[in-house]
Image 1 (spheres, rainbow, N blue to C red):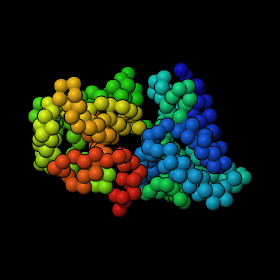
Image 2 (cartoon, one colour):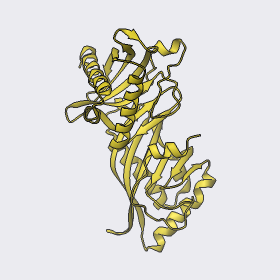
Image 3 (cartoon, rainbow, N blue to C red):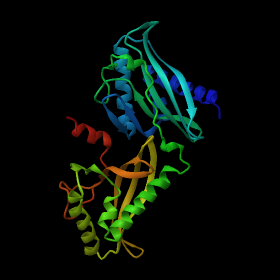
Image 4 (tube, rainbow, N blue to C red):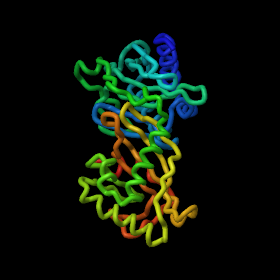
Length: 316
């Protein structure tokens, strides 16, 4: 695995997605972008989870580029390297042109690719744009020397680890559940990155301290006991590194008595952040109808609200 091979793969991915953007080819976008994926500008960070959100944002951005009068959207790779045999990281510069004439300032980006079922797909992109929200209706370049400067790569990228993200996620869930089942509040809080956010179908709450967590911690144990359960179990279903220090995972939570399930499953999503060599909870979303934190009785909802929806309703 040489840098030349990485650069060729990186450029081919750029070309495929650039052509698709200008043509409004959403089939290629869906085939060459891994969900969920992380999109960052200088002023925003959003995780795109669903095909519907991907297609909507992709078409809107394509219309924005063409609306500038552009006939060509050229992205040229400047460097790329394998993080391991599954991930490539690289840098490129975007030129938005009407024939050969720029219609906006060029800007630098960093992108990470993932190999999935033999196809290289975009997993993360960080661009030197100043747009504060997504989708992007009018691309705005940071008017400084930084717009032509590489977006820095993280010093320690979790994707270099030999451990699969799903394995890490299950280990995190097991530790969190063990603390709950042992009634060890201090151990439970050691997994939390304060302040973190808690979301349900209709509610968004900032959890600032252990004092905010204690009522929830106790209520869950009381709910398990009220159903004659003896423990809480979380089963990891999907997980991926969406950046060098962020992991997005999906799991199901059940209350159990022996081998029997007495409540659940409740679908959930967590965003974990890596600090040093450990992972901590940054955000959790539960498929619940409850409108208050802590809740008295958990009320499962039919679906898990997307991060995109949460972003929109918490926009300031």
